[in-house]
Length: 353
Image (cartoon, rainbow, N blue to C red; front, top):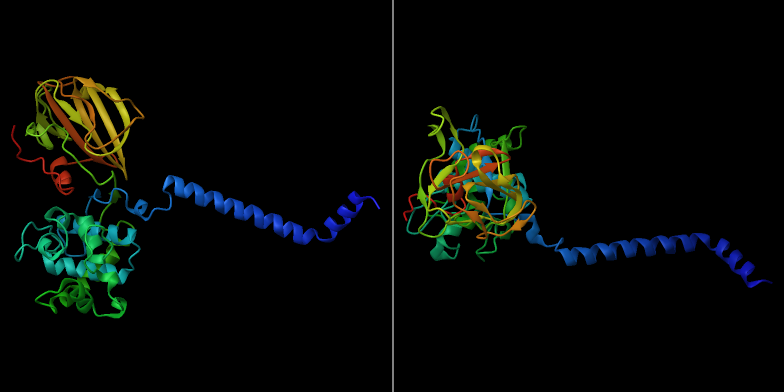
């Protein structure tokens, strides 16, 4: 008999087995390619979950109904944003908020008992990180949960059975407070805060993460002289009252201007009253704008790193003298750059040439 005929009959007889084998081969090949591409691109890196972790922003804090000031609501929203990124269940979120309420009243403190700092009053001398890290909302929250890279101290998720512990016991296992029962009095309010944050509006209209976590000054060291601040003012050229959506820094013509964090240039060139303007998108809805420059050293679509020169100080557009007009925007809403950047451990306020 013709071997081709025999082969065809056998193929038909075992068609089910052959089909299954082909499907298995295709699936295996597909999975293999995914793994290879993931390894090559870093797509499976756990750190990708928290790119830009230090650059967390809360816009439009709404403290209504939970007994918080706008500042407290903003900090609570940041803690909860970190918790959800880490997939912490609501019970853990309540413990974190109750702890921060007791330790700092949800105000990012630069002082405390001995060297205690930040929302959780973590002590650098006890291994919780540097002073800057303990005051970084994201890093201190990660540390509280035991998921920080900058400290090996035990956090909440390292405590066996924390899910069934009373709030005060769970908090105390992490904090080691001299007043271990104090956390309990904040439980009711903490539950309300966590519930409010899960509503349609939440504690903040927008909570975003952007950049690579590294922020640097936009001008050389010693060259930061704050001028016109963020807020309403009489425009120096038009003479009309209008919102000044950034902060000005006086600097000599030609002084280098640097990108403050990594990102992608979305505009590079002249535009209206801004003159020569560079806009950098840092991800997470966060953008920075650098205006009135004498020249632009980057192109639209180019990727830049923190500290990379993008142009030079000038007086193009509607300007009365050489200076840098700096803006920070979160989903296109302008925020005051100085406190926003200070929350990223970058203090541009009060520096002198």
